[in-house]
Length: 418
Image (tube, rainbow, N blue to C red; front, side, top):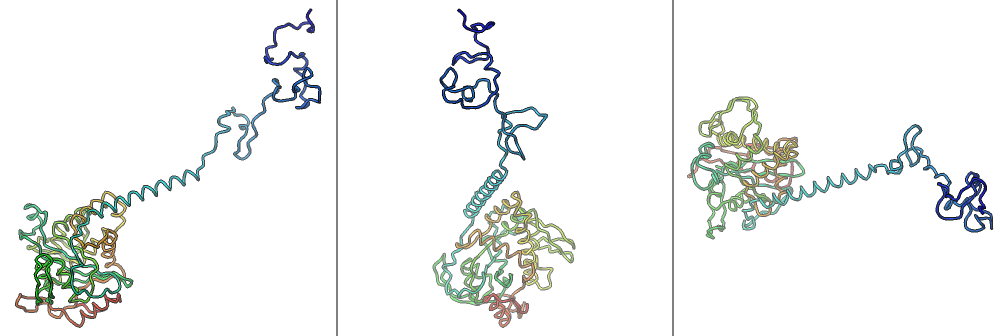
């Protein structure tokens, strides 16, 4: 006998689950009153009541919480609802920016360290200042001895022809300058190569022979025993302690200028010198390596001869340092690295010179042209002093001593220029 109400069948209702006993149709539409049935009144006298959400198969799913001000919740009215979009987290821009900055810093750090190690490995530390005898006490600031030689090292026959360097073997000091850096500005003081000085006693680093003291031209010290005796002679005659040494030859000088793309120089009047090859019109123009070398070597047009040439060299070195240390070079890797490579391949420095110290030297060269910078020759009493070695440059001893004392004490330079 069928106990179900009339019209009911034994077929399961399509909306019923498989577990639990069948219920009267009326239970399907009863309003939900409580999630917990009164004691003893669960469905069929046992288990949870219909109000228990774990078993209420007809209870509608709750809508996602409403969103306010960009939080999670339902979509705006009139738009389709995508559950994945509703619960997708917003981008954390602060975190992204932080990691981007950290990544850039790490790249710059690795690049900087790599560049330093590369540059440090290329420095030609070939001058041993520890063998220099009877060195004066150190003063205030830093003193660099910058030397330009007529070395043809690495030049082919064609390059020697193009640069008009001649074909002499060996190397002679062609340019000597003391660059002083300190708290009272930078000073660049030229020591004419024909300066008549005392070359002190010295034990040759190569020959081991004891060289007696003598009167001679300054550049003879380099010809006799190289950089070490030259430093000894400069220190002996000036009383200044040379902290670092830098030397460059003809070919290296031209290579650095070419790597920079040229150096701009301005001439108040035309410059012509058939011996060096200098031939420039009045006005500003970019000089390539060969033209730059011709300019710093020319002296026959100058009324002051070698003293006039040293002034040209100071102007050019100031312009060179200004261009090397400019943002246009330092921030352009396509110019910076070729310039660094050419400089490091060409420069010969002392064993204690670091890459940072070399950078400071170039910055100081730039600074001699700025406010507070000084460029001058050592004070001279007689530019044509007659000697048994030919015409020489005789220093003004009193004015020169005053100048060197000011540099040693890092005072403002005020000695008159001879």
